[in-house]
Each structure stands twice: as structure tokens, then as C-alpha cells.
Amino acid sequence: MQSALRELHSQQDREISVNRDKQNRYVSFTLATVFLAAASFAVVSACTGQQAKAKPNYIFKDPPKPGIVAKIGNMEITEEALVGEDKLEFFDLKKREYELKMERLNKLLADKLIGDEAKAAGMSMDDFINKKIVGGEIKISDKEFKKFVAEKRIPENQINPQIKERIISYLQSMKKQDLIQSHLAKLTKNTPVEVYFSKPKMMVNVEAGNAPFFGKANAPVTIVEFSDFQCPFCARGAETVNELKKKYGGKIKVAFRHFPLPMHKEARPAAEASLCVNEQGMDKFWKFHDIVFKNADKLDPANLEKFAKDAGADTTKFKECVQAKKYADAVQKDMEYGEKIGVKSTPTFFINGQLLSGAVPIETFSEIIDEELSEKK
Image (cartoon, rainbow, N blue to C red; front, side, top):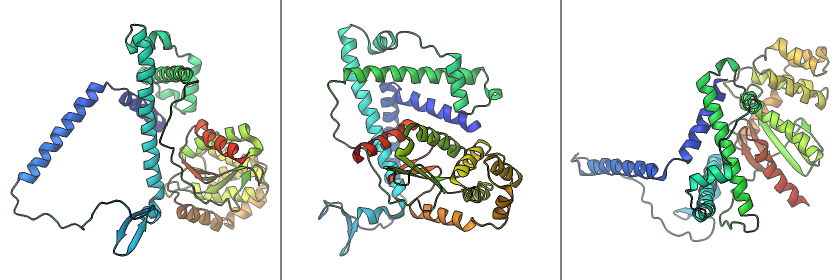
């Protein structure tokens, strides 16, 4: 609930930060540099009577051959060995670097192309955007406002005038960005921008195992999801997966593996319960899956039994299965396997081995899925 509001604030703050005036950023950077330089000078010029702490002797040079990042004695260290178990963290850094580069490239593109148009029209760039591209004040309809509130699960009793104003301002900003992007798409339709850096990919050999799945077993694209029934972001991820099922049908296989987090005390019993439902049919599992995610705050044993019944399961068999903890080991093995391949948070998805973490929009999934489908042709 509150997290949705915090997310909105964070997103808008990022927008404000990205679009902040160049001069302000330059001044901030300059001041920070001055303060850091002054602090460094104070440290090195102070007489402490202490010698600097000894550090290993590192020499930075070109590698003797591709793929080698260091050498300890006669032992050559590969990139893979250096990254070790922290490959997801390194991948996130590379992905963020790529995203920052694309943000900067997009800004330079707008500065150049729209800037040239504004200059030819004898207008400032801001005026040109507002008058020629946006076309005046951006209106947000009541329907658009309510849709956003519903998608972000913001309780109506928490929407005061200030919050409403901030939501409307955010939606106006998003609409403006969409209009600018559409304009740039037209300008570059016949003259594409050449990009000489690539989007990072992390390929992981992931097995679906005996996990419940949707779709054909031999579908060209397999999505293996590691999720937690009590995680709010997983609930949003589940909605996106349902959208993907409708969009791609038999072209995708979605396998659901369990990764209940320690702070979610009811997630593990719910995971075990879901497999008790699954043994009565995968169609019942997916119905149970949807019901549970819609009622993540009601995962006590009585409700889990009710949800199993609502999904079409035989409650007598379900109760026997749950009480015997028949699938406790299966859930544990899912968790251990997830940890082994580097899963640290939920939801985490692997699309034909490509990592995608968090409750990202369907467009992000589709970009990878469409690439994979085109390569399979």
C-alpha cells in the first residue's frame, strides 16, 4: 500500500533528477569536487605520525590474452572466476550502465534533432516541444487517474489532494515523454541512429525441473519463474505473466518454481499447499496460484483450504497432503536450486536463460521474447 506511494514518489523524483537543468548539475558536481578535494588535502597534509597501511601490490596492464583479468603468480584469473557467485550483481551493474548510456543517447538525440527543428522555427527547444510536439496543456482524464491508482494498488483513503496532484503531475510527465519519443521515432524512421555498444545479456542454464508449467513442453520460449506467494511484487509479476499467456499462447512455456523469502512466514506453507493442489491437476494449480496472489494477506491454513476448494481441488486429499508435508522437500529443493543459480530476490525470471528480475512491465518481457522467437524462425 504505502510501497506503491513510495514507488510513485521515487519514480517522479528520478524523472525530476534526469531532467534537471544542466547548469545546476554542473554546479552541484563542482561543489562536490571542491569539498572532496579539500577533504583529501586536509587528510594528506595532516601530521599524524602514522604510516599508511600496507596494501597488496597491484600493477595494472593489458591482459596477456583475451578473457584473463588478473594473474596471481602463475595462476591466471578469468572473468568468470573473478565474478564467482556475484554474477547477478555484476550483471545488474552492466545493465544499469547500458540503461544510463541509452538515457544519455536519447537526450543527445532529442537535443540534436528537436533542437535543430526548434532553431529553424526560431523557437527555444522548450517552447517548440510544448507548442509543436505536446500541443499545449496535457490533460489527465479521471479514467486514466483511476486506472493508475488501481494498477499501483493505492488505497483511495490515502489519496489526499497533495497525493492526487503528484500522481497527475507524474502522469502528465509520462505523457509528455511518450509524445517526445513518438516524435523522435518519426524523425529517425528512415535515418536510424547507429549505436556501437550492445545490451548486456546474462545467459544461465536454468532447468524447469518438475515445476508446474503453462503451455507446451516444447515451446520455443521457456520462462522459469522463482516466486513467493506473499511477495507484493510477485503478485504484480503474476499479473504480467497472465498477460503474456494471453499474448503468446503456445509460443511460451511458463514454469513456476518456489522461492519463499524468510521474512514471509506464510509463503512457504502456501508454496507446499500449491503443490498439493498441483498433484490434482496443473489447471487447478494455476487457478490456486491466481487466487492466492489476489489474497496474499490471507494465507492462514483455513483460507488455503478454501482457496484449494475454489480452484477445484478435492479438499480431503488436499488436507491429507498438506498435513503430511508431502512437498516440503520439493519446495526446499527449489530454494536451494534458486540460490545455486544466483537468485537473491523475487520475482526472478529466466527467459530462455536470460535474466529478468523484479516486477517489470510486459513490454520488457516482450522485447526479450520477440527476440527469441525471431531467432527460432
